[in-house]
Image 1 (tube, rainbow, N blue to C red):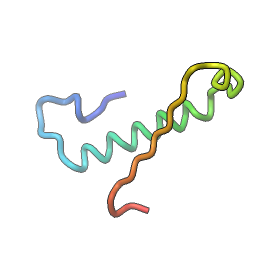
Image 2: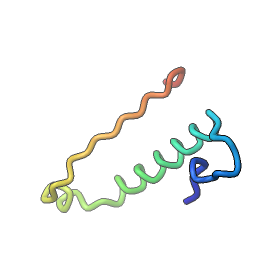
Image 3: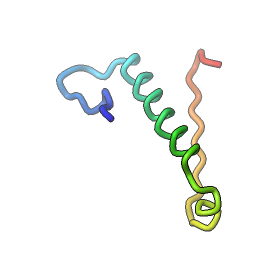
Length: 57
């Protein structure tokens, strides 16, 4: 997956950042749907991600 932040040929605008966050959200959503819940419970992975975007609800 290509992220705008990796493109050194142009400035990293607010729209580019928002688009990257949308891509990250999609990746995390897909991982959450596909993960084996029992495997996660037995692993040492403990992570919570919450992204607030000002002006969004």
